[in-house]
Amino acid sequence: MSKISDINAASGAPLLNINALPRSREVSSQRTGSFSNEVDTKLALSVLSRQLAGAAERAAVRDSQLSRQELATLGARIQMDLGGVGYRLTKPLHDAFVPDTDDQERLARAEQATAFVNGRGDNPFKALTLEQLSLIGYDEGGDFTYNERLAASRELGHRYSLWSSAIVEKARAEYQSTGYQDETIREVIAYYKALPPIMEAGFGNYEIDLTLLIGKTDQRQSSEDDPLIEVILKTVRKLEDEAEKAHSPIDPSIKPGGPA
Image (cartoon, rainbow, N blue to C red; front, top):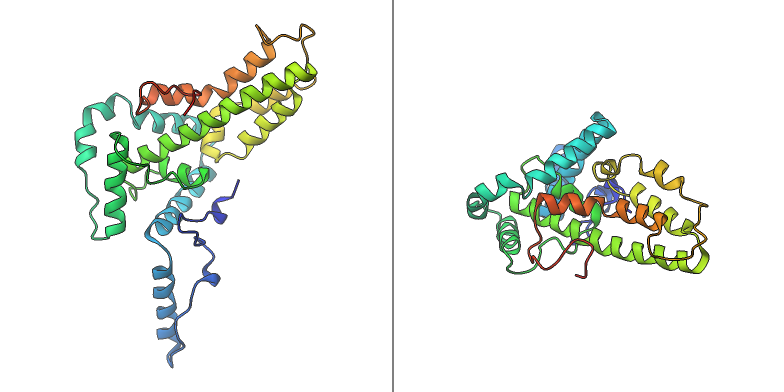
């Protein structure tokens, strides 16, 4: 997974690789030339790129200042805010909210996010990376509207549901074939390690818990009532259960971990 400094915007332009951006023409005044370069740099970055860059800076400060447990608590609170009881009471206000800007890109994206969370149209963030989605969903800096953050959060849940369904099936297949689930467990650990810190923290001591399962087997060779599978299943469902409590899917027939 890309690090924050490597994040690309949906347009594909590097967020922080300033040297790769077009420069203005040289002018006689060095000061004027510096200012022109700065203007060109800002113009070369899309609005979303600049917003993501700001969110990345805030996330870096947050992650450096909070302990793992504090990050887990904050992440859980943010997810509850995005779709809990308070959201249901204030939903009309969020749906009617219009960003205080004349930028048509921001206005259109905010409108699309509102349409999406109300079951109309596509998610404006469906093409973003997992880390970009995390930057939006967990950002409380005010650059993104509530419905934009909710849309990003729902895409995160959708991605996680697809992954967890696939990893559970892989665990079952490996167990049926070898009697072990070592490779699947290592893949789960690697996946969690690659998550943004505020998401990874929500899994607690997952690395220790899962590592203890490596090398263990059950000679019954049955997928029924298999304690190893059940432990993995319980672990990979954790984020989905929390997300379901925080807010229901747009389509009530779609359950976390089920087919998209």
